[in-house]
Amino acid sequence: MRIVTRADFDGVVCAVLLYEVEDVEGPVNWVEPNQVQKGMAEIRPGDIMANLPYDPDCELWFDHHYTNRPQKPFKGAFRMAPSAARVIFEHYAGRFKGDYRELVDQADKIDAAELTVEEVKHPENHPYILLSMTLSSADRDDEPYWNRLVHLLRSQKMDRVMGDPEVQERCQAVIERNRRYEAILKEQTRQIDHVAVSDFRSFADAPSGNRFLIYSLYPESVVQVRVRNDRERPEMVIISVGHSIFNRNCNVNVGLMLSQFGGGGHAGAGSCTVPKTDADEVLEKIIGILQKNQKND
Image 1: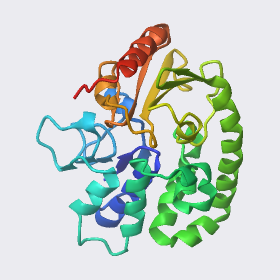
Image 2 (image 1 turned 60 degrees about the vertical axis):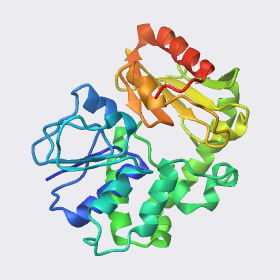
Image 3 (image 1 turned 90 degrees about the vertical axis):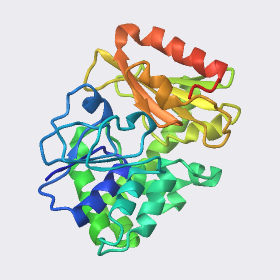
Image 4 (image 1 turned 90 degrees about the horizontal axis):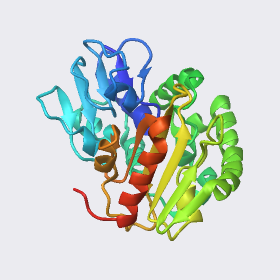
């Protein structure tokens, strides 16, 4: 059996839990949701998928995303929950040797974006939040780190994890990157009514940083649209949408909206990948839907 999940904090915690309760071989196979949706991910019989759209070739599947609701019988578990890790944790209740309650609670909090303004502005004071920011699927060269983090969280208490030299180095890099990202956000973001649009297509490599920072910088916005080039497929553009975690007045189900454009996600956050030639048209449609701010579920 292999674990197949995505490289975010929820995916890492899913892997931690699955290694504990299933007979898993080798490192995690890290893939992105759109790779599964487009049939580009290698899913083998016996694989355990988590935090990703369903693929019929897998043995077990665990997820919580609104747009991934199962249409056919499957093995595993699906329900609307703060994190996919929570779905796994409750499915295997009583089978864990270690105490993962705090880790799963933090996965819930981070994946559901239940954060305070202080936690967003100063993640360096909050270990789990800062650690989650060291994970980015943008650089496939980081796969050894993702697997190492799974191992550390399985075997060490949080203070020991944060004391690991590589983790410390990456956390310091996150703090510096967040400082630079704030300046770039202010330069590249325009406000359209209650929609903040951050367009990074002018960058060869899209800048990255604290994904919640935008909501503290533009408190009047109820939603952000983020546009960037797909590094692995230069002919494609990624459009991400997220509800503000502070001004919670966006009525649009983001995952359902983006399913119209070949994407998906949660009610409050998601993404789609479109051809570069169609990006402006799709972006205009998405912004128009968000401006109307009408319920769509």
